[in-house]
Length: 219
Image 1 (cartoon, rainbow, N blue to C red):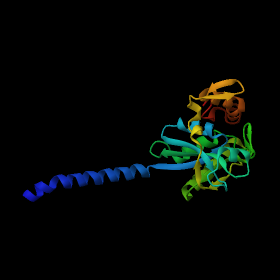
Image 2 (cartoon, helix red, strand yellow; image 1 turned 45 degrees about the horizontal axis):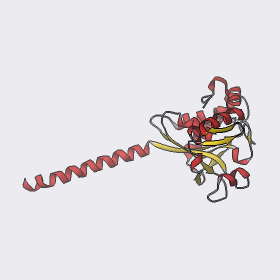
Image 3 (cartoon, rainbow, N blue to C red; image 1 turned 120 degrees about the horizontal axis):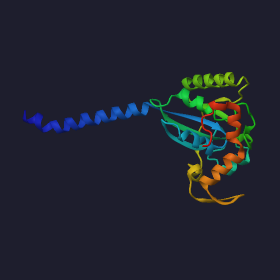
Image 4 (cartoon, rainbow, N blue to C red; image 1 turned 60 degrees about the horizontal axis):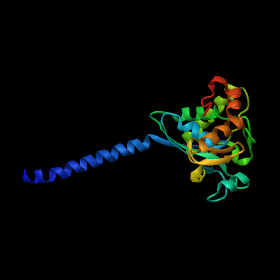
């Protein structure tokens, strides 16, 4: 009995640690990451950070051939990269199918040359998939989008490639407070973002295309 009493705290601590590790593994298994490209990554990040169950939305670059690309290199063209957003979400709160449904209805998937006022390779739309389950879900979402529009959807489903996080000033740009120079004069980032989004015609085009099914108007 004496030995058991002495070892009991250590045994209890070990059991607690095992329980915590098991809980952590379950929590990790419940999360999933999906990378999408929908034009300006500021807008895609803003849209998906508003979705319940999304744990993070990170702006970055993917699908290209240049290692550690900069914004200037990507936007100039020639690197092959897309402006993309890596979305990590909790499957218990929002499903992969729901994320993809929202994505297709937040862009113009009929446009192969860019998105809205932003043209060129870095602004093309795409879904990047990491496994067969994501591929099947993306194909289904694309088919559903084409059926809903009654038009050909050109957004490709591509194999996931290395994702490079964009510069820090691009992260959460839509709610930033730093002053930036715009054609309307100095503005806070959040104000500049709203002016850009409206001026680029993103919401107007999405609403015209998707009507009441457009999920993120005004983000």
